[in-house]
Amino acid sequence: MSKRGKNYRAAAEKVDREKLYEPAEAVALAKETAFTKFDATIEVHMRLGVDPRHADQQVRDVVMLPHGLGKTMRVVVFAQGDAAKAARHAGADVVAEDEADVKEVENGPMDFDVAISTPEMMGMVGRLGRVLGPRGLMPNPKAGTVVNEGNMGQAIEEAKAGRVEFRLDKTANLHVAIGKASFDEQQLNENLAALMEAVVKARPAAAKGAYIRRMTLAATMGPGIKVDPNLAQAMENTD
Image (cartoon, rainbow, N blue to C red; front, side):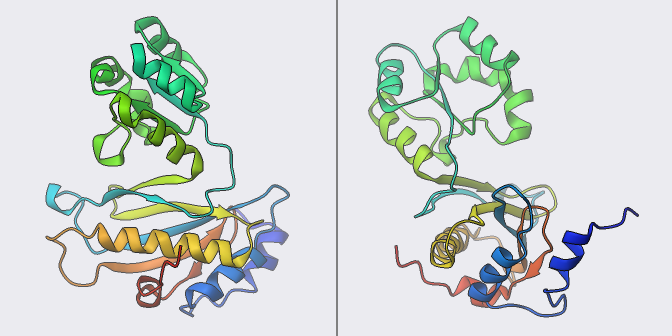
């Protein structure tokens, strides 16, 4: 087992590994234990009481974080004609209109955060499943990333403003960023409250028993801070 660095060990000493922290207390501690030279991301990790093997127990949705993620979101749009014009007007970073453009995206650096497509382009986009899928970038109607021309501007605006998709992984966990360590505590708390509200609303009808089993907050490369899931679910989104 590799040894932890001295900065990590110093940060970990500030965390009681047996304690379930109140959400606001955990947010403050996550900021305090962010030791990287770059602006660390504050992440939430949740273990849910659902079985991801069953289609009726999937958890997938989007949430608008009131204070965004603290980063410039790059958006690629797959569209043609007027929809492509609307995408450029709305500030899309890349617009792919034909087979050559799609191939260029496939072979490119994949340096974008959100992919949006019109329904008509999904036939071409589907071929990129092997590269978009593993990164969670495949456009999907449920995530609001398959849109018609009339909704294109709003979709791009929301993506750049801080709309975040969350989806269950194969081990029944959610991993979602809520901002940067440079955010003040109120901003992070309000982003966390918005996320919790969205996750609770996304609870499948087939889920039985405790929904959020475990919850941890951490800064990039920092120690995990256990959060009381019951108190987190009771947070109020005042945005």
